[in-house]
Length: 464
Ligand code: FAD
Image (cartoon, rainbow, N blue to C red; front, side):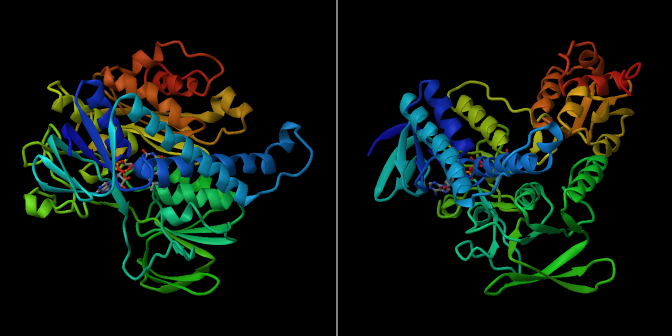
């Protein structure tokens, strides 16, 4: 048994970052992980493997559809699924091993096994009880289930996001239940690999919560890429057969019932927080109505010395939000002032084109009651995007009409996930749109479109 200043439970982006930062601040730290490898959902079955498949399938799409247009001709590129899975596994391994290395470098002990908390100040792993001054719960989330739909990732017919990353072979047809980020990313992967993909969504829009203009444009672009959408449809159930599955849904507009068949059904209806097996009930840790761990402004639960961060607490279920909370909680525990600006957390969808946003949507900005102004600069006016044959989409910027302060930005276009960060920095500094407009941007870059959107909020964009 050892005594620690901090034991972190869970080694996802929330947990491992928290452990490393706490160790850097001089605390004696351990991190418990029940999985075989470090890195949590993100590195093992989330962000990283999905981005490997998105990258590889994007390359295939470029080779099949755009190489010839650029004068790149020659032998036809073919998909080798086993090799693509190997590339994905190598990417994951490289990253999970990287966390192992960082733990060693920062002297964070990795306690292998599933943890429970018998009482504040104690963490049990296997038969061993470790004493610790502080505990951070960073146990993350798992895919949400859907009534009438039984997921069996082993069988590979009705799967969740974890099963969709390791299908035995790419399907010829796929139904994705849920038009959120995960469903559209993985749906895009298989569409590019040749599947007919139909997305069935309960709401009348895709990517709920995003700016309405972006939702519309995004759906248009994905439809052009071959994805089909059935919106306003309530899934009643799904049945797996030997060679595929059928999904029954009712259209909300007229209550009519429909059945759709596909080789594979991906259930992507969101994720739910998990604190299974920790014993939080017995400890009296308060939870929210939706099953998240309730925390205060310093990430502490109602039980002194027990903190919680990441997907298991309220807020966007994003790796970088978990990381920020991990760093901040470590700082608070070390006696410093931790800080997370929840108003400036970017969100990115890694399709082609990418979709990125930060701050308020136009709808949310209007709801605040303030006077706002908006601008939209199309990538058709951006030379770099045109050279890459990716000129669909736009940068939309929202600012306060009186102060010119940037309130939000929504980008659909090439490199959107990288470009959004200049707006994040601007918003962190409370910048006006004019500050971005007056900043010299290198030419030719897609970032020039951000500047143009800012210019459009003032005297006007140049290239429209
Ligand atoms: P997790 O990463 O879920 O880690 C929790 C860890 O705790 C797990 O490893 C689990 O085994 C461990 N654990 C749980 N209970 C115990 C216990 N009792 N004892 C020991 N260990 C325990 N987010 C993004 O920001 N960008 C993306 O591009 C993105 N893509 C995604 C794609 C997919 C397919 C999925 C599923 C998710 C994606 N996400 C993405 C979301 C992201 O993965 C999560 O927001 C992030 O992993 C949350 O981090 P976390 O540290 O809170 O928890």
